[in-house]
Length: 195
Ligand SMILES: Nc1ncnc2c1ncn2[C@@H]1O[C@H](COP(=O)(O)OP(=O)(O)O)[C@@H](O)[C@H]1O
Ligand SMILES: [Mg+2]
Image (cartoon, rainbow, N blue to C red):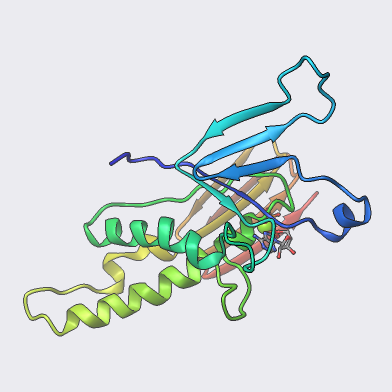
C-alpha cells in the first residue's frame, strides 16, 4: 500500500459562481478527474485527464449517484488513517487549495447531521475504538498514546519568515506579518495579523 495518497474534491458552486452562471469545467469518473478548457480551439485537446487515488464529486447533491459526501471521504481517508494510528504510525493530512475551495469543510465540516468533516468523525471513532479495546485485558490504549490524531494546524501566510512550534490541539494563523514566531501548547489559538 502506498504511504502517500492523493485525493481531489470538487465542491458545489458558491453564490457568486451561481450568479455569474459559471459552467463546471471539472468532470469525474472513478478516480479520474478531467478539466475542460472552454477556450481551446476545435483542433486543440480541450479535455485533460488526471488520475488520483480518489476523485470526489461533491459538486451536486446526495440525489446524484456519483455524489461523494462527508461520510464517503471519511470512510476512504479518515478510517485508513485511524487504522494506521492504531498500528502505531504517525499520520498526516495536508489539505491544499485556494481560499474558499473547501479545505475546512472537508477537514472540519459543519456541526450538522451528515456534515461533519474528517476530524470530528475520526475523533468520534477514535474514542469508540478505545472504549472497545478496554474490554480486552491484553490491550491498552490511552488517548495520550495517540495524541497527533486530534491536532489541527492551519496556517495561511504571505510572511517571509514564519516559525511555529506547537503542540496545540487547534491552531489557526492567518498572517501577512514579516516576522511571526509562535510557540504554544494552547488548546485553541487564533492569530490574524497584518502588522
Ligand atoms: N463539499 C462541499 N459541500 C458543500 N459545501 C461546501 C463544500 N466544500 C466547501 N463548501 C462550502 O464552501 C465554502 C468555502 O469552503 P471552506 O471549507 O471554508 O474553504 P477553505 O477552507 O478552503 O477556504 C464554505 O461555505 C463551505 O461550507
Ligand atoms: Mg478554511
